[in-house]
Length: 266
Length: 274
Image 1 (tube, each protein chain N blue to C red):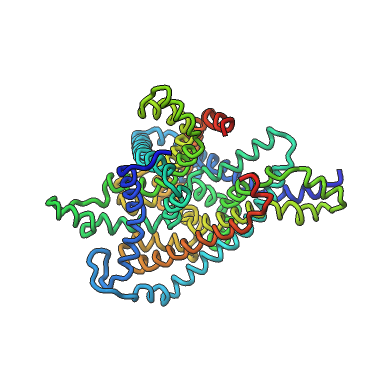
Image 2: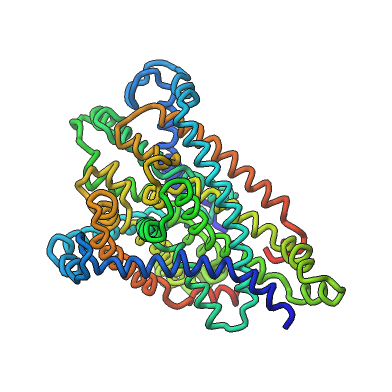
């Protein structure tokens, strides 16, 4: 392999600096005692204190986490069942059709998902607020879970299920003792992605949230539209920290759960 | 078959989801596009979509999405290429991906400060002897921030395609006397075209429908199809017109997907060589 010469290294360095600069810029000014993101006056933690003193913001933070955890759990359950259903489909055309339908929500622009869900909820009379946000997050996370779980299921040799059945396992045993443990890495990856999708979503939530309910993204949007407040900077510092911890945690989990069987193929 | 009931239990929640949240929403969008503000069945929305206002909007939306995709590609391809040549390439790739996990709104918000009149970019311009520029609320800032947001999504598929590329093919090309440019044009580029295509797909479609970046960074100067839909649904409350624009956006989405899916030329070849 050819070694990287100076110019490409410089290029990569510039890309890294540009990608991280805005994030560190935000965090840097979160410690500014001045009011804005231009003159750094002196070091302070008051903006972090402001985040924790703002009960409204804390309620929104809890909302965001509750919606993320619940939607990730429920969408993982439905998505895993869906992936198993797709696996057992005999008809190839049918399976492809279902897979395309599954992928529609992944590629659809958020605005369309948001707008169409807004129509749907209004039609069937779901009150906009916690319920509508939760249902939407479940709905757009399910296809991700299916995509993460299906390859693991396809990796599983069908003889494994047959062997279990021959040895007298009931259908339930097959599911809980054979299939689920085998696809566990896929399930975890799906759950984790669903969680991040939910935490990160802005556009869909923006459409289906009513007046009384808000998540962090929606709140940041309305704060940012009002102008620069260093509370947002402090918030982004905290979010960056949590993100990095999550990424590390995810890699730790995905390494640990790599069963020897699953490890064979990648 | 005795496993029938169990199979139904697997299938019901997922099928219900497909019907309720994939098929019904699209059907509802199409249905609503035929109604005007007063609730009368009409084709007026489609008529007005083909009026000059909306046609201009569509063209400018495509133009911006094209620019965003082009610049993302121009910056992402070399990045992905150099990344595959680094020692710990997967670690570096992860570091490239981490910023994309930070909430999009926060990153957009950062640029309000960076491009602001008293921000670092203007401070730098002043040092260079150029007077302060109003950078926020311009086309430039909109395209720049969008490219910034989308670049990791463009790098990822291209990196994967390059990573799968068999180095023996490059050696062969060089042995046969091709120079670096010819090797790139005739060997590397065609074999990574699928990565490029999926990169274009994941950037172009969202770029057509962004609305928060246009609102926060571009003021109300840049209006994309996404901004128009948001406007019609949440501000004007004209769901009919909003749905009509959405119908066209869905149509464009399908066209782009058909174009960018293409034939899986490189992958089958890679599958063999691997």
